[in-house]
Image (cartoon, rainbow, N blue to C red; front, side):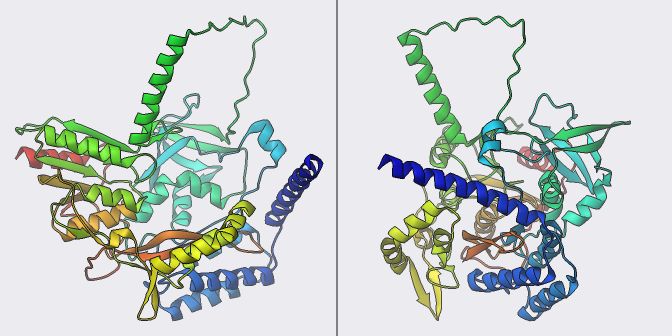
Length: 521
């Protein structure tokens, strides 16, 4: 029995090693026009099969012409990266930000991971932002790096930053006809988009400008394992053993830290919280409650909102700011929880979600790359089939998935009824826009900033299918559900518009300043 198990594990390891080599070889080679045409047809078939509203912002005739034009433009063998650059603008023409494609990257062997750990792209340690078609270093997560925060990025490997930004803007899209999403999204994702569009390298040469001085630095790819350098003259100091009482105190302290990190959604790499709450001192009779939500992901959100609104209630605060700038979305459950504290009326949070087929939401389970996941899906298929029977119903020939948030919901007993301000910008997307739609439609809040990147009338999201194209190995993400709040506006295809438009300025928070001044008046 043990010998059989050992042989099985050995075969699995050898197969995995072989498949990694085969995969890396395949994505490194040029693909013939016939192979690329097959991938294009494959991608289009999957979009038509899975996407619940593919022709929401583009007609079938227009998309068909783009697909045909793309096929005709490829007459010579091309690499996976070149094909990605050609296919991405066609997928972006659908004008739905959750539907996107990603180029393949070389995989590491088990041996490589064991020695160095997982490899990251060169710009992983840096955060960027863009203003007026210029890119700046916003944060540096590696303290040992010599790049100065606030520096303007002039070029990368002798390619002008302005030219790179122009090329990146064709590769992705917001929802609908929005124009505020892409400039900000591309600016913040500058390092990611550079990695997607260029061959993997261990380092890149970056030219920067700080004040009047111009300098160049190499930015290196990182690995998860840090190699410790031991000095020859180092004296090893024995570690003092802790007493039982000290260990107990340490465990209790660690438990409290973990609980706080979970509640506020701590990002271990960036060393920052997803959810933040504080009071801003103003000239008015009460302090302004300020809630900054970077994303609706990660952690125990229920404890955070319960604690925050209890503090607001105790302080009798009459003004609340919810900052959704840069919030790309997250969990539907979390935004519904937050909304239940912001209304005193019963509500239906979202409509039933339209799909292409009754079993569409199970597609990711049965088409995962994980053999464990596939095995589990097959074993539990009777349970999953029964589940979809109760959750998915056909209406006028179309299947609809019924979330619990599609039923009538009740607000919290201590819901906040004071003045509400919401700060938004082009990167207020997905779940942020669904929440904003509710607050805008019910005239519950004053919106300050720029139009949201997510559309007022809904988005294609919910569950996602990840499809790998057979030849180029490009990955495509497809939303499986049409999710929208029970509110619509005309014309369709635009985001939530601010009541007070303020354009973002580098180094100055004009939006927050305006709110504080408005409260003081």
